[in-house]
Image (cartoon, rainbow, N blue to C red; front, side, top):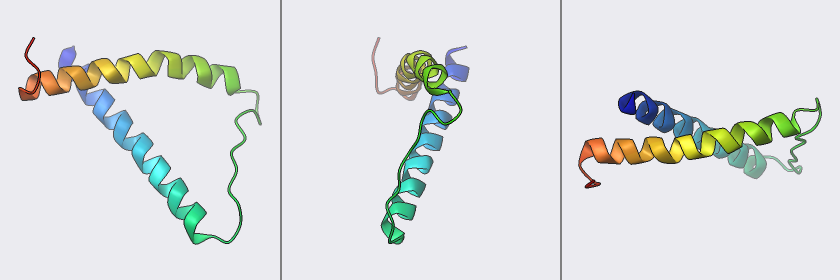
Length: 74
């Protein structure tokens, strides 16, 4: 289970990093402003609650990954 949580957390962090890199690239390469609307379809609170669950899972997964690699002694 630790290995699965670690793998998922690394994948999610990588996907979020790619998302932000793409947003930055589009914003820097275009002459117009870029804006986010988080409540177009009423999903603001669902996403908020999802991130409340996902963020601790990411931290725990990174801990398990570093522990498996030998960087953390427990």
